[in-house]
Image (tube, rainbow, N blue to C red; front, side, top):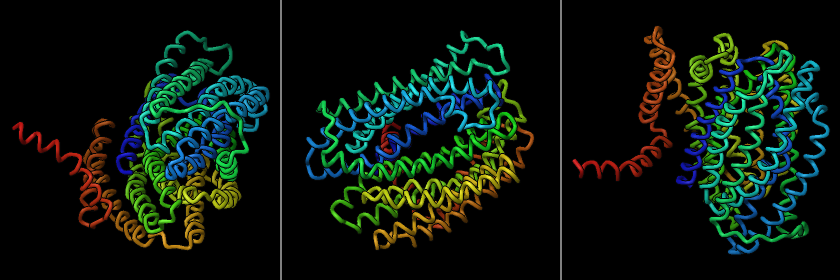
Length: 524
């Protein structure tokens, strides 16, 4: 599992770097204004349809089902169920996307009611382009589910890299030939919508290559009554409904209420959420790698191994996400400046976006640990309990978002999202223990959490001293020095406090670097 998590984590990190380059290119070209708000809003309805129908619900349920077939040595059923799922998704998406394209203006009006008539019309046009990309994203999700079940990660690792790189290159090329437009909205942003559609096709072709390496056996069937397909539908439905709750929370937080705030607010929240997603992506990689293993031990009712895997994954996520949360709160301004303050993106834009980063950073631990706790349910094929927790969380989070926007504006929206994350993961943890009627090894995780918190506080002091000492240095120099000092400081405190995850990290590094050091010594 560690090797798989490493591969996924490295690929996600590289993809995230390219994602930041993409966002930086867009920010430098257009700044932070209503034009970029429109581009960001145009992603929302297509992304929501994808996540609810396929990207989260079906793909999450898909992995445990395929893993069970593999554990039972029924590989023929793996490919039959995959074929049926692929065919049904393709058919369903043609119907849904045709309706969505027709009703794009209404969807945009629901997503961003604070937009004026011209902005709504432009956002609807871009939304229609984005729906083409969703078709390929959905088919990708089916193929990636197969690769994850086989623990073959090359296609899933390379695809997102090509996807982000293609958006950057094609967007820049097409931006040069598209006109600004007669109105106040810079319609050259359409170049990046078109680039997204083409990039999703390239990603799809890479996933086909990844699955082809597994020697698939395609069946032209729509056998929706097959027991594996029926179980997939039964498990997916609660996840789909739960994801709709999550997306509603996201809608209220990042577009619906933000569309009533000053122009550029949607973009500021979008950029901030992508910055704090970096440590959460590490948690996602651990969760993705853990789910097949958890599913297999749960299938044979090996609860001791389940507890060991779950507790280990949760502890690793806390160990990584807590210092990242503290670091982002301390370095929000320099991070945003280095990543995005170029071209038309001003220092004032940086200040606004940094406030949102601070608010979202508070919830990094909550959303990172959610990636493990939720998969604890999926591994035992329980998707209804997370659904109930999401419903409760949505009711509370809507109120939190409204209060946050009213009294603290942009910062309030970010803090409200963080608060709802803690509520959700706390409730899910309690329910998972009750669902399994077994201990989850949480006492060891709690002990590690407290020591990691102390180490993070020590790291914060080190970072503060370095920033004070380099107050007059260029931003990028100050940031890199603070990051290096923070990593070194946290590592030192983690060793002194004997945090188990730090010891595991050192053992892993010795195994990885040992052969290199030995070879270098022999060469010398």
